[in-house]
Amino acid sequence: MNRPFHLIIGIFILLVLWGKFELIELTLIFIPIAFTIFSDVDAGTPYHRNFLTHSNIIWFIVWFYNPSFITALVCLSVGVHCLLDVNLYPSSWKGTYLIKFGRHGLFWWSKGHQGRYSTLWLIGNFIWGIVVLCIQLGVIKW
Image (cartoon, rainbow, N blue to C red; front, side, top):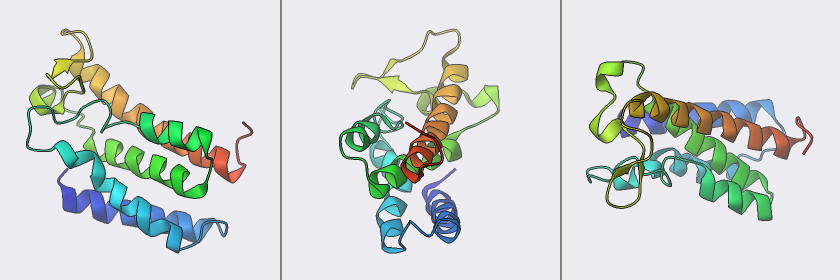
């Protein structure tokens, strides 16, 4: 899905969250909205879909050491971006769709299942973002 759709759907999801939870202030929504498109900072390069730009690893570490709604929302917004990048058609699981490890574009997963595991990586990061937000909101006890 291209960037304008990432932004529009990301804004919609975050605004729905804002309407659902009174604890999240509207001003806290604007920063995570930018992160719905942040993951594509490496778009147009052979290293697109690097495992760091298309995951919550960095933001989870920031949230773990400094739990706040803003970092939890950033985790969710990166997860939303990952979910919007999921392609369910195996014929498209090649090239820039694959999650890469390292700046030389080495494939993170084994060659036989790289598309399937890239899809699981993207979906897993969306779920991870939801879990971090639920922990922050007190829905899940940590």
